[in-house]
Image (cartoon, helix red, strand yellow):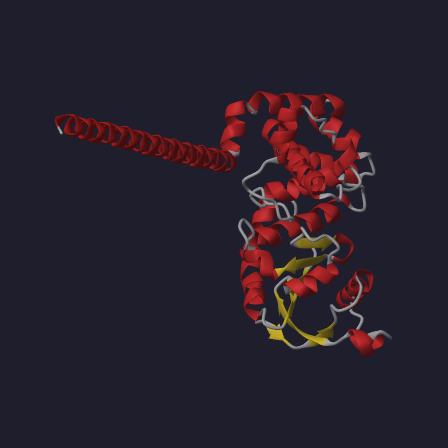
Length: 347
């Protein structure tokens, strides 16, 4: 049975204060115990508690909270089955409206994020209707982050593995707004750019294109790893990390290859799979739009040239008519003059 009651939480303060209050809330600290309560805790929120999950939400998102409560058991079971790890913790889900979420996240492209130390997932509910995002896939993505960090027992998980695996379990979606019509990874491979996973160990870049490329690189490498060595290789990597081993050594032990060799093999596989035909297919809409624009310009130029030719022809015809008229008038004048002369001679 779901339990509902209102609590107070603000989202009208700087990011660091907002998150501090969120963490205090989910750690069990009541709002009135915080000295900022008088000015900070203004907006009413609701809460739903179910089996193994706690959901807090902005006003008006009761339906979204009910959806999370209904979907969570299946999401948890699917994730446990795919990663062969058990969810032994109770995640706290925070559903926010767009304005509230934008104050809790510093990145305008992010639609959700997880805080593993608090088992907390924060979701922008307004983006859950933007293709390809759904509440189910987004929740599975973020829950994967929590499960990975719990499985590592404090060990250091590289950012590329964390994000790559979360995308793998959630049908390939990231937690940022990426155009499905453009592949930054394909463009990078075609351009011959360096794809260095070690550069994605600590964090992802901040600028839009580099950030999107980092997510695609992570997804591609993890998918390659699982396709070639199986999901058990990921489990083994996590086990080595849990023992305190460096992630690069953990990967090497799991696949019996040095990380450098594995990365090189992945890059060669990318180049082999990515042909110009694939690139053209991935960018079909942009290419068709460009061709349509070219055809429109050509059509305009042809119409313009045809109109000019018609105007020139019309001017030429007009000049010819004037010339003929002038010649006819001259002939008529000559004939009239000749007739007059003949008449004068007769007289």
